[in-house]
Length: 110
Image (cartoon, rainbow, N blue to C red; front, side, top):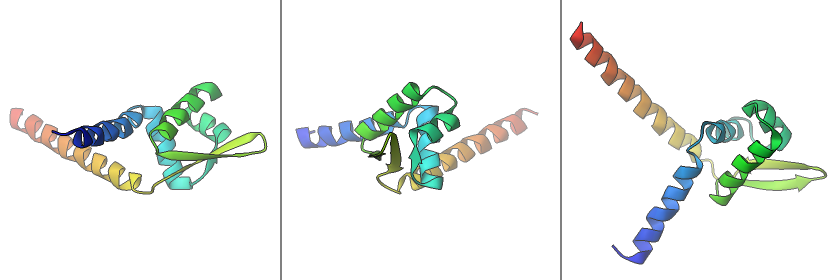
């Protein structure tokens, strides 16, 4: 495998890793559903302190998933791309498939 291919997989892993925390998934889901939000609104949603939410947002921003804009004393975040909703739909399909398989296994044991 050449360097370009390896860099591509590393970049993909960075994006997926940025989504690898429930709070960050919650933030992305909120931005996807309701659009732009300030840090204070996301802090209420996640239920942690502002510095923790800011760190999560920083990881999402570094991965290229969100962008920010400062307005006065507030910083507002929004998704850079809308395709994350398709990704979430794919994840839900996997979860449903896994649950169906588990139900079938339990039904076989009964």
